[in-house]
Image (cartoon, rainbow, N blue to C red):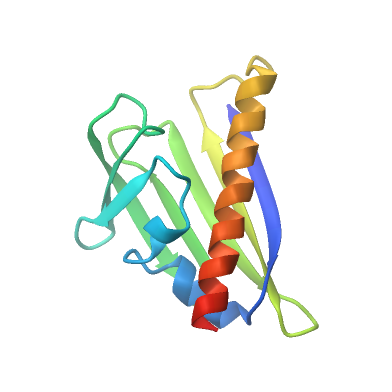
Length: 138
């Protein structure tokens, strides 16, 4: 299983960051380019795009815990994919976000360096876009 993680400071308090990150109607503004998500009902999302395995539209699970400032997701029809986003307070009044994804169908040691760099770049880009979206809502 290959796992990826990235962390970034956010320009707002944790509650604001969580509100933006957990809003399914806003996620397409900060998710990686090539991934599109729409609300599929209670705790379900529909995902499609270039980065979705197998092409077409796939059903996923999406949950958010305000008490834990945490968002979790995974593929319902592709259970080898899961991830989470955690918001944490900082002493200076800002916050930071860590995003983590697990790709159970990719070997940890056998994943090509180019692929690892591609996934890390997508995470970093997403966090940068999330910071921009948070700044607009702060």
